[in-house]
Image (cartoon, rainbow, N blue to C red; front, side):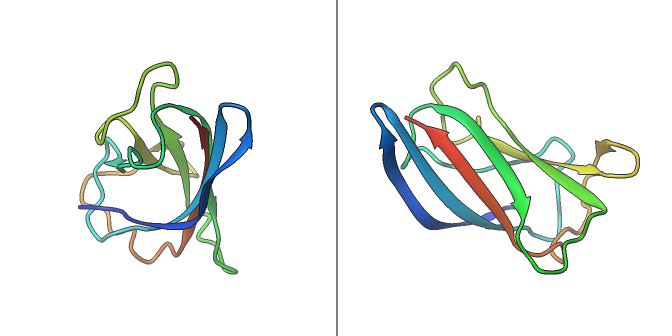
Length: 112
């Protein structure tokens, strides 16, 4: 149960006190309904916003993904998660769901 995070760009300073980074995410075959933690502590102390987008030419629109964290608190290796939802019902993806075929996701993060 893990997400493979690969840095594409950054983190780069885009304004005083603000940096941006872009990552690709590859999902595994055993998802957790509560979401999967990703460790961004090497690049950020705080996250201000983030967006997860499907990056493959043929996106699997049966699922949607969110970056979940407390934006006002310093992050740790376990406080930043990617959550997955079933698009048709807007409910969390069940435990052990195989999302490995969803394809590449792109994560854009702004923080400090």
